[in-house]
Image (cartoon, rainbow, N blue to C red):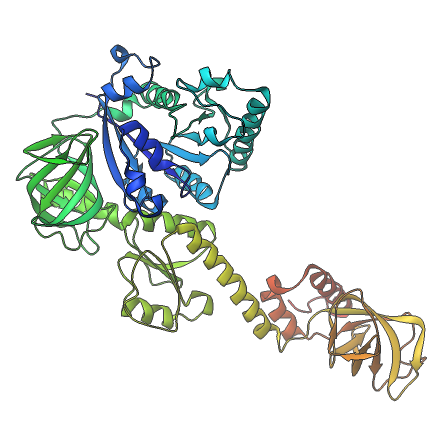
Length: 570
């Protein structure tokens, strides 16, 4: 049999994810939420009769093979990543909601990265077309309404859609307005909609159902007699019932009194199902049932579920208990990272968010020593403090509590992209700090030209006009000519004022002790900073801190030394 299609809504805050779902299920969840921003993940079963009714004749009930849709509305991509199962996302398909007037926002881009990571097929709902200047809303579908608009309105919409197309191309994704898509396997469909008026909702549902039946049929096939497999959506405290697990059952059947294995932090948790509450279509009400078959939205009452987190896998285990325990825990352990190598500490509130955070950090080449679920503990702080490298003395955390104060750097947010951005900024500023410390006692590459016609004093000390050809000239810098130390920059004047250092391209007056113009030095001479072999080897290690022109000057210095000693610096 074919199970229900699981569809999740993702996108930037306030772009209309919940409003679109509200229109379809004829509810008003968005208006009840604080600031009309979704605070909790929600799942809704949409029966086929509702889908057909809203499709306005675009979907033929007789041709439908899927039995219903499950819509998942998320307060952020963090919740979307909770919808995980081994090998990818629990969601069969996603709707990326974009405000057609505002375009892409940071969370929109983050959503795309996560959808790509989980290999989740998606379509785009270009929402709020009713707010386009001059747009005239009326009942009916989008194609019927757009043909009635003024040419300037049509042009405005086209421009906004092609901005979305251009943005998607940055992610190497091809896209087009849904009615102009040639091949749905190669192009992402963009459906213009209005959650307020309902325009485009019929086409959105048509594209969703059509894609599912044409390309996802094999994925939706299940054996209803097989042991149930589910993912924890949320852990809820309910009056009179205690700790309840809200889950998505995506395969097989689960029954009252079944033994189940749930993934844990340290080891798999074995427990029994005390009660099953099944969500009723189009309502947030749950009714007590004896069993349920995939796909379904359930609330399960079990014993010993205090240490369970969102995103954890659940499997019915009435037989082969030890084998299933190993399978479930290996699924958890493929996300958790525990090594003896150097790196940062990463914490998150669920398995899915941890997985997404790790993936994005690896793209930034971050080294991770340990990644786990739960609050920031004394152990986490001690481990971070013990790291040898300053860059690793940091804890990155998603939506968890810090149980103990510490001077260790902690970045803790409830938006994944904010954690990544803050981490990158922190690393960049710390590297600059380290660069200053590391390079403080090392002679840096510098190249200067003694200018013709600018001899202010011949000796004691000699004072000449100088142009800095590369690097920085600093007071006290030792200088060489033809590979031999000849003098140093005793003092530097720029526009009659003393200064400690000058950059490439500047012309200044410099005092050189222990030399006489016409003997040891002459105008037209090129002098280089004096760098010994030990300093050169250190500069090789710190090469990333040098500017391009400093690297070029260093190459010239190497050539000078290797004329006499081919093995210099090797």
